[in-house]
Length: 191
Image (tube, rainbow, N blue to C red; front, side, top):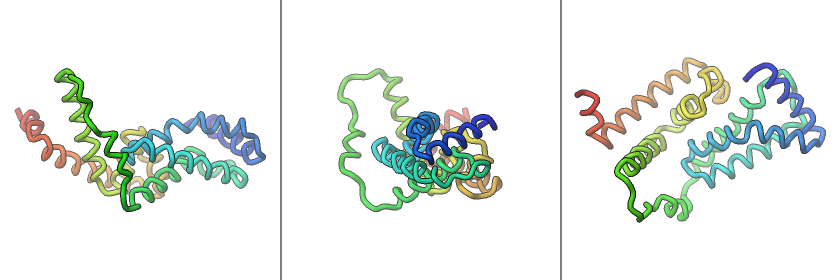
């Protein structure tokens, strides 16, 4: 994020803190899509992700009153809140039975390539969901949300070296899990 974007965010936060709902709407427009994508990829459930994003933006609205320009970037602060809310949600026991209904396969005939692509996607989603929380957070931030290691470290409040270590372990776990789920993929790489 450029210095101009950060300055604009700081200005929008100041205006939102004084009750300017248009400024707050602009913040939501600027950061809502990335926050929603982060939560959806982390949780694997779009409905829960929407709830997380709503809560995160509620907290941003409250925080706007005491926002200090020049400190943390709005995007970094917001991503940290989203990650923490996702971690809290993942720790909560039980699932909504409607979640399983969204995974029911479409009974209509499909082409082989579409089926194969869907299966690969589900395998990757399951493997990512099985990662430990901190590894999953690092992977989602850096790979799917395209943050730099420095930005992701700031969101998770850890060092860049710790992010890199989490990413190495996450990638290794994914390689092992995907090889176990699809033995043909490993054979194909060695051929």
